[in-house]
Length: 346
Image 1: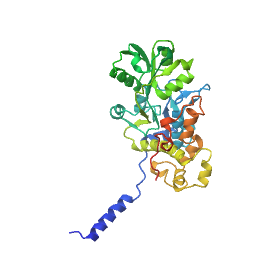
Image 2: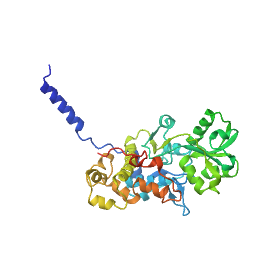
Image 3: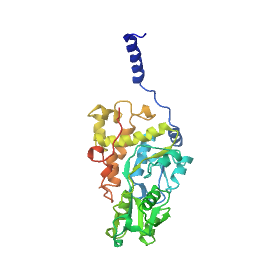
Image 4: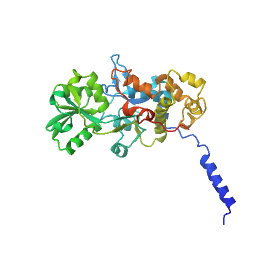
């Protein structure tokens, strides 16, 4: 029979094992490939998906998702210049990921059960939230999708929007015809030329398009129906858990920096005089941020110095520093009325 002393010894031994530092994880196969290649291959778009993945008038990539790709390149390779953006249609993004043509898909990609279980993908923590919506001409004088009976809807091919809109219209008994296009410019043309009565898209991007890409934006209304609430996440191949960890903590580090008040403007001062132990760990003043991921301890500091925190990235690409002036809404920090949060940095 065990005495109370022997029970305490066993419990203490178990606790010491549980609290023992974990060994550094094995190097990610994707990380090794990127290091050997010298560049990170990240998804782009076959055109412009405004605010997220677009090409400016100097033929340069820009957008929220592009900046996240650059942040990841800094984290894993030490420079935002070591990223190659690979133009892909919506339908091409997952085959390109599976074949190794890209290392990660960061491209307004919804996390769905089908993609998670049937396509061999793994997803990061969500970094953006938005749902499918429908835009129509104001002259149709309708406010909900029930007014689209017998109508035609333009949509981008290879997106979740097709199924979400079709399911919604079928559920409410609306007869319709769906017309799919490969490129955003083709969808816009189909809608503005009158080929379609409605334009279905992801709500945030639809608002951006109406404001910047369609003549007389006030003559077009986004219907009241909110057809989904979709978490947007980075997609990776299954089987490389270490790579998933790296992408997750890259996103978490940007969000956590905003929570902690660390910006591109004050990161050097915060590094010289960390206000608390969490900031010291976050910026690599204290060891720990690198070894567990197979990276440098300073990777988050370097990333924030170059790209800013998540709020800064949002504001210059979608918010008040952009042409789109899109309110953050759900995509604000949890402490500011939104739903974005970062895991605990211990």
